[in-house]
Image 1 (cartoon, helix red, strand yellow):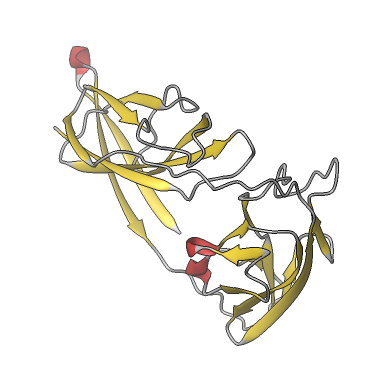
Image 2 (tube, rainbow, N blue to C red; image 1 turned 180 degrees about the vertical axis):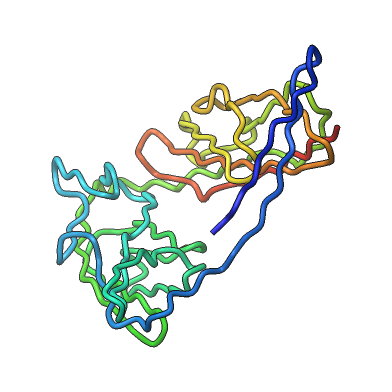
Length: 232
């Protein structure tokens, strides 16, 4: 859990100045985990015509998705445990169908059947998956969010994903999002280049942004990150 405290200090006619601080807190449930379950159909079928699910439109090789995993705890509370930070690890019985990626992400790499295994606190859940997608060969694109940079408060900051590429040379769809720092207004978040106005800060602060790209056939990239340090 990331806790963010933000204050806006009035400078009168000079506008405002932003002051913020953040801390990451690891919260452990007081009760033991009793079982692992999945918020999806069982068995899971990916690629069926017209499927609409928590994974979005899954109909091509290279598609990346997150598996909605929940844990049942002894205190009667059901909690989401999808991400590795909760202690969850993943396995695939057939990595030629679904491959496990860093960060708890899963990628479709072929048609067929596999069993996904989810482990947390000594408990294990298993989900059978049947993949039947468009099997046209397709290499996933590669996202490049650019190099880290330092800017002055009040300046316009440009984020560039122009170095992202697709191995087959296809056009890309872009998706920028902010993952750290007090929230800024991110313009053109679905373009190769996004921008925002660096807020006024009282001391150097780091803002972190994530870029994902998708090719025309639906294959996704792994996320790429860039840090922007704003100085007073």
